[in-house]
Image 1 (cartoon, rainbow, N blue to C red):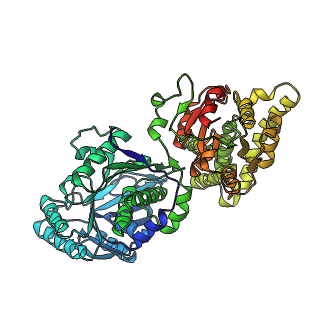
Image 2: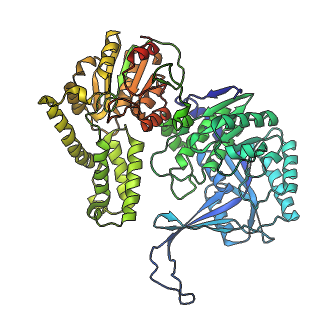
Image 3: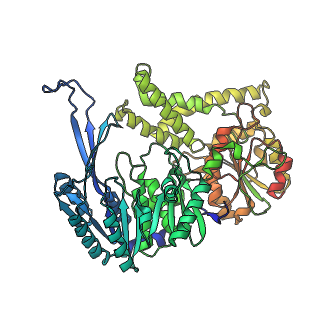
Length: 640
């Protein structure tokens, strides 16, 4: 791609407060498809048969309703803190409309622009039955609506009146059977032309190209279609194509264009350049329904209140990462949720490269993969992770954690639960372990408690806290580790049998070059001290050995990085962070350190592990090595 593209550095958070301040000044009108979402909890008991049909009766034990479609956009705007939010749209004269208006009004949204009619129009409703936590076939209402000319005129009048009281207007279209007829679009364009002082943002699945003088929010497939591309439905649009498409559209419209890429973040095209906001890693289950509405709301409110384009995109990305974690609802994000989330967001870097080894770029005649070029610097401080980076004493910990977690979740039902339930829980545990590799064990155990509660086999009174489950896990893990240590102490094995190839020599070379070395681990402090001593390299860490201290609020690796930066007064360019897990690399990225990912094959102790490679690239590694065997070629990259 030839267009200028910038990867926005995701870590600083000085943009957040100005963006929230802008939102507080936003007066927003949303014209759109207003829907009601219904969630019906169905009892999984079909013992009762209907007398009339002889079919099993589906009994609803709970029901919950929330605004959907444009209704979700306005509730997101209100939750974000927009000063005024006005809803303009068409509803039927039915009970669904009454409930939707009640919900919106209760949230402080001005709903007098929601017009009602019996004329060929039903309030759209998405009814979502939930059976054993799974969503069954949806029931949709309002799928045969027709917009009469008289109702179109009423809508345009309501829109024009509301625009005069707003500084930003969202045109939202999600339904195939929508209010956006050709006459309506022409009328909206007339209103846009009459109000150049108002920012108009369009999010339309089928008519984005029909509007003039507007900012567009599109997903990557919608952007491709807008340019006349006829990709099949399952076609994957990669970063370069999405960036190029965004730039072409922005050049045509002479307005900023935002292109969303789901879990891969979003792209901004404006003023002849393209910027990319990375996606944010979500651990655990998530529900993407409504995430696009959150993005639209955040973009509109930030821009409407006078915020910067890049800040609007950052906030939209962050807000969506919060709402997707709210299951079985079209959720919202509030400033109280955004403030702590911003500095702790785990951004996903280079996702396409991470999943495609064939795109790898290597230092000539080496196995050193260059992910991104960094300015030349001489490393003076280096923080190393331990397990999997230097040592394999704990190799195989996953095979201990998995059965331990299954036992904790299923309890006495471990051997008697049905095969399909067991396999479903087993798969969930494996995904959870993979996603949380590298974080403190206490944090993993806290996640385990969530899984225990989710599946419901263990009574609440019998659920332990994170310390209790960690003690069970550590007991089993240390049996394996201590056996290996005993073999070393008896001379049956050597430390080198548990060392990643060339690790000790690399440490020695760094220390001889005047680099101060630090060891950081999520393992308990006393255990990592003892294991480094057994391995014979504890003395090389003149910056200290730092492990977990039993406090879930203290992330050992993060604390070490912050301590080095703050107390030593060094610049990020002088700092090297080395590890085989995402936590240490992401923490290094927050301080602009050079990040060396060790994608080690812990079984062989040399060679590349492709799963680790993918994980490390996504965490922001600048360089990837399989081991330390090519240290002579690696050291010059560190200025040594």
